[in-house]
Image (cartoon, rainbow, N blue to C red; front, side):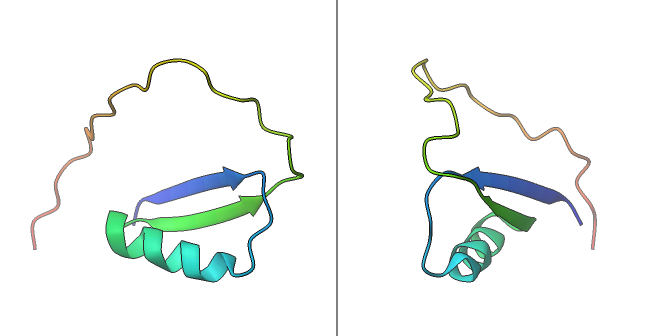
Length: 59
């Protein structure tokens, strides 16, 4: 199974709820890493399109 690591710089009351929601919506195993507030750089550029180039598994 594919995996996604999400770094957040805020403290959540329930990171497991976010983890479950992301797994449900994205279909990926998700690891949530909570960092010290303000430790991630702010992003001020235009968003980039992401294309999923993984091989599609047949069931």
